[in-house]
Length: 253
Image: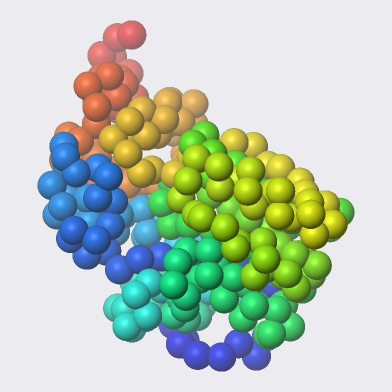
């Protein structure tokens, strides 16, 4: 793990992450989760996301970057990341400002493109990251929409990187954040592409989406997260039944 400047002139794959501290992450899961369980779940989500991002970065020739909040947690999170990641602190008063800061850092390094992803999108796989890079060959901004009106992945080409401050100058973590970002991009004359809809794991009900995704594809890239939820028996009632059926084919349908 390296902390510091970025001499490479490659595209960036930046994972936005928070320190997995009790009472500071995944608090919308509490209750029914305890704060300790929510922090443990987030640690699994982060580990899964970093591992999948490391594989994608190698395959796509990208610079794997870990953007850390709060800034003083850089050494703590750097120690959790796979080899090859570089860590930098998030800077800014809100999420939009912090995203813009990372995009400007990428542009200043000479990166021709940047992929910005969260650390709580359990089904975001390397194939979608690769698709995002391909789409940036013909469009300025690529969005991976979420079911709640947000997004779990953004791809920024050169023109989008140059106006990142304007792109994210609106309230974040709202039901209209995707629409607001796309509207700002279009006002700036940027072309916008869309990927398939996914989800972040923010609320207890989001676990149902994860259980459904598990049934469709048992190889989704979040095995630590699934294992933790199984071990702790933290699924919602219907999803708990689904999880048992997944792991025990003889349990019936």
